[in-house]
Length: 121
Image 1: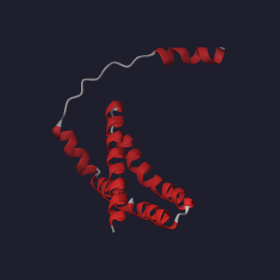
Image 2: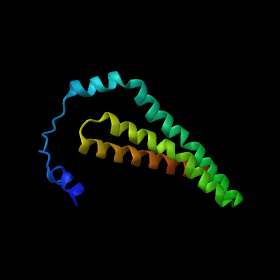
Image 3: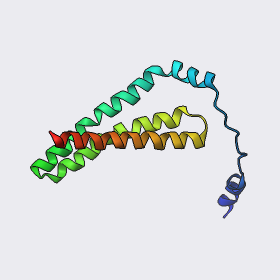
Image 4: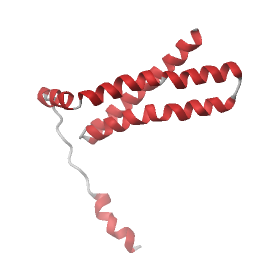
């Protein structure tokens, strides 16, 4: 009981709402500083998701369930690294969560497009 009493003031603490405004200088500074990381994260992640999609196609044609698990294992880092990159570099928590959700959604859409494109071949 005493252990939980130590954390009650922290749990009740509410942060004030921030007034978020778009500042073009900060935006350009971010991309000037992290341009190579943004290229790696945005381009390499979406291209590298083609390999797990190819494994899914192979698993479907050969009927091997284990390859579906392999595709899931192979795609995990390519989803996780860009989302963590966005969460790390965006300073505002609410904006970071929104940006990470959008990044994850775009990568999921890219993965689905890879699967559809490979099944068309």
